[in-house]
Amino acid sequence: MGNVSSPVTALKGEEQRLVRCKEINRQQLLLRPVEVEKLVDLGHPVRAIWELVGRFNLELFYAEVESVEGVAGRPVWDPRLLISLWIYAYKEGVSSAREIARLCEYHPAYQWLSGLEVVNYHTLADFWIRHNEALDQLFIEVLGVLSHEGLITLQRVMHDGTKVKACASDKSFHRKATLQDHLRLAREQVEQMGDPESEELSQRVAKARQRALREKQQRLEEALKALEQIEASRSKASEKERARASSTDPEARVMLQAKGAYGPSYNVQISTDAKAKIIVGVGVTQAPTDAAELEPAVDRVEANLGEKPKQMVVDAGFTNQATMEAMTEKQVDLIGALPERSGVAPNRLQQRGVRPEFYPQAFEYDASADCYRCPAGKVLLYETQERQGASLRRRYRARASECRVCAFQAQCCPGTKRGRSLVRSEQTPELAAFQAKMETAEAQAIYKQRSGVAEFPNAWIKDKIGLRQFRLRGLAKVSLEALWACLTYNICQWIRLCWRPQILAQA
Ligand code: SF4
Image (cartoon, rainbow, N blue to C red):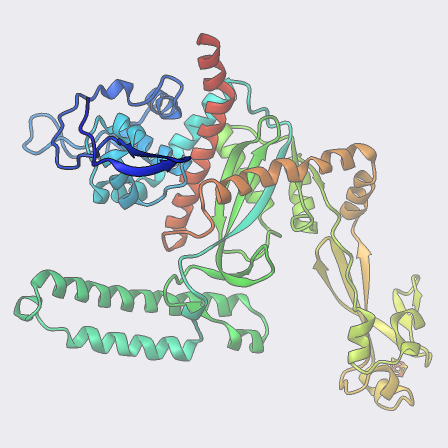
């Protein structure tokens, strides 16, 4: 029997008693045998991850290992173990190398994987970001297994984009003049840096400071380059002037988040096969909208699985003219929400001082001459056209010389030096066909499935894995983070749909 702590006096009814409790001895030393194999039960998902990762050809990971037989040096951690540790950690919502190293010290699942050894966090972090091509290949191999299990058919693929916050704050975004000031300051600081060996601080600290200053200078140079790209992508001078870039993550872009706020983000594009909600393609872009993202998504799926999806289902953010044409050319059936038709809203006209009698409906369209006639009887000729969404916007304009002398100018086009213009939105043949298709009950029934399939992996990756904000910076590195998350998601689907039923059947 163990030691007993000092009795405690307690009253039960009218009876006074001395209660005996077991003493907790924190001074003792214990040696316990640990049977590693029994740290986790047979149905534990960590076994499934280890088993599945072991099935794959990890040659690309092994190719980078420098410790080889016959050459001096210590053996390194097996890539199979490092992959399994990261996948299990992601599954549990852990995406920090330091945290995984800590968990290896006491958590049974991590201990089972590592055989009670603790993997250094530097090793884990390096492995996490180093194997770009190899991780892509692993993602494809997992898709091969899932396809073999009949979980992927590519008959119907739901596609969606989700914004994930970049590892940068709003305050890190600056205009050109501020970035140039910061860069000048950083260059001066780098030039003034002394020899770390002559510093009073420890050499390690001095070198770390110098490295931080050089990295800061490099990031500011990259931010200025990114700013040039942003400016080049904008047509209006006023928009170019307002352009800003982040000094922390120059490749991040300000995007509209799901909750309606703007913030530094990346746009993660995920294609999900409808059969078993398996992610069949993932990409990360700097595009603030989804408008041009469907065609590359189809290409990614084809590159991963060797064939194109038969049907892509998307929301209204993707359904525009260029996408419709691209899907027709690729012979992929497109199902999606109809884009909203746009024109100049009456309140915009009101703000410009246009009187209701001179709103567009007061202008008469002459189809035979393709022109409009205004309430004063003057002609508005075709001027230009542009695509907006899936509509063709044709602009017509009256002669400035006629409007200038018109008695109605103050009510029709006040303050306009050019003549009054009018926009006519037309449906393209592709939009008309798409609209006709989307009015059928079958297409509407398919579209209703979209949110349940396409938004499921997005929500899972954000809620379960916790990928609401990237830990890394730069497009290449955040793409890797997104790939690790999607790889983990697919492996979890395999565990749920294939491995666990087998284990239960054997039990
Ligand atoms: S201002 Fe120009 S467009 Fe307007 S009614 Fe007069 S002539 Fe016609």
